[in-house]
Amino acid sequence: MERKDKELRGSSNGVIGSYHKWLKSRTQGITWLPKLKGLSGKEAKIPEESKEVQALKAELKKTRVVKEKLKVPVTRVRKECDELKDINVTTVEALKQETKKARKEEWSKNKFQRALWGSSNELKLRKAEIDKSRMESMVLEDKLKICQRSKRSLTEQLSKIKENMLIIIDQYKEKVNLVASHRQMLEDEQAKVSAL
Image (cartoon, rainbow, N blue to C red; front, side, top):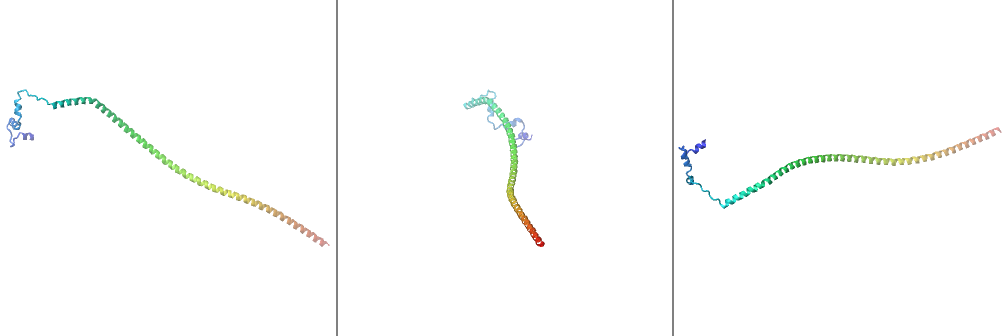
């Protein structure tokens, strides 16, 4: 409302008396308006189109024909693009699933490798213990062989000592019997002497 009020005011901001005065004041600088008024009763002449305009119209017509021809391929391409987008979404989802599956398999593989590594270390420790036990067994076997050889040697020595002891005992018995027979002989001789 304020804008319209300002437009209806003159240069001195006074109110213009009528619309015709206001229109006249607004159209003072327009030079072609009287000529247009003069032609209002006559049929307006249509200017001939220039060659450049005709060429542009022909080009525009060709462009429209090309546009019409391109509608079907563009529609097909758009449809293919939409299908490719769907395929791409499906492929991305499949890749996500495969990646998830591969990560899970990798995790399981790493877990199995860690378990295998732990078992391998445990087997190595057990093998080391077994090797140590074998070495100790071999040392004990060697000591046992030495003890057996010593036992056989002691047995042989004891057997020889026993044989020697038996020989000595037999010799002692012979000497005791010899002494006894000599004593008996002496006693008999003494008795004979006493009897005389």
